[in-house]
Image (cartoon, rainbow over all chains, first blue to last red; front, side, top):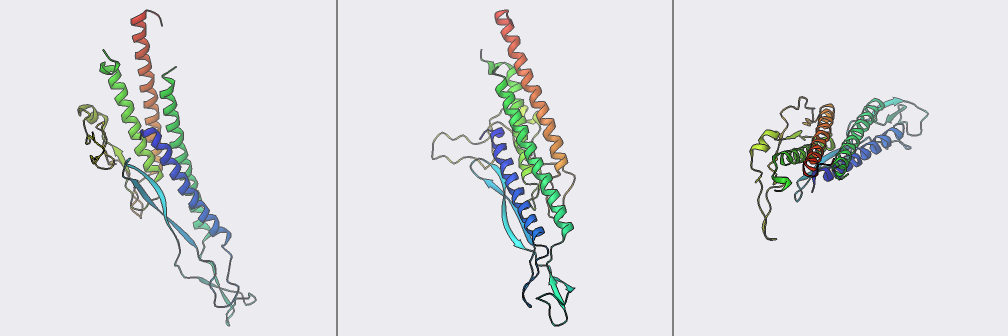
Length: 136
Length: 133
């Protein structure tokens, strides 16, 4: 495939992947305070997303795709809140392992990568239109 | 005499091909900027491409011929691991977005220059042939 045309496909895959990442970040942020409703149950466990390179053997173009969305296996920390419905006999509840600072950092990086992909898209589009301008 | 035989147009168009291929590799780097283990790539220098006759890759003249390696090109451009990538993150990814953005801007500008030169050459040819701009 013509390199400039394949850039449109590559950047689109990058933007899609970063969009997925942003979705996972917002799921984590929204559920950051979701604790269990019954004693013994676990609160919200943070989701993590991993990307992988997808190489198209026919065209030689490598795009990106989401390889998996897993759960963060870090242990839950405890908080003293005896009035909560899921408090154990000592009055502690398990809180979600989402760290707001980490999620904000993830969000910023996802936005930055999204913008970089968008810029590549624009650059390719501009270069193609310069070729077409030769016809004028 | 064909346009493609004139060294000026040949050079400009090969330059544009090379720049297009380079932009593709940069786009791949940017798309994979968060993929663990991905090493940033770049294309072989333009001088090397000029020196080669452009007969790289495997010719397939029959549908049963197997094509060359994935990513092999017939224009003499090959991809190498980027020697200028200065930063590798903990997960093995060596793409730095700032570096890629700077490269991409350079490529865009050079492409614009090459396209303008091509057009100028064409205008001069028209001028010489017809005497009219």
